[in-house]
Image (cartoon, rainbow, N blue to C red):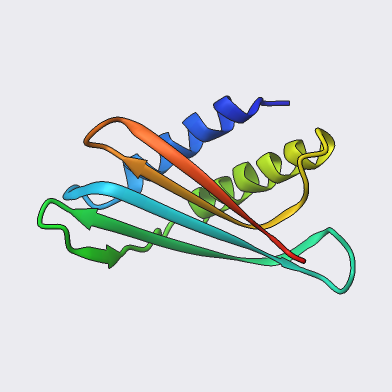
Length: 112
């Protein structure tokens, strides 16, 4: 199993390669839609946004289903890893990649 750093690095690589060229900040929001009262995910939602050099924010799409599936699988692997290490089970994951300073931040939303 990949560790969390491997997952973050792979997510960043995939997003950077698929974001618009003018992006200086890339944002991913991954929302897990949970089926009934289980912790298993059903249909998931993706939101891809970016900020350009003029500080304008916009969304972008990824039309390749294989790439979107890869992103989803990486997010779910991170969720499972955190669950296994008893860090909780999140239902939304926000990843921000700042290309100006080569850093990322991750934020997790948990259901009550």
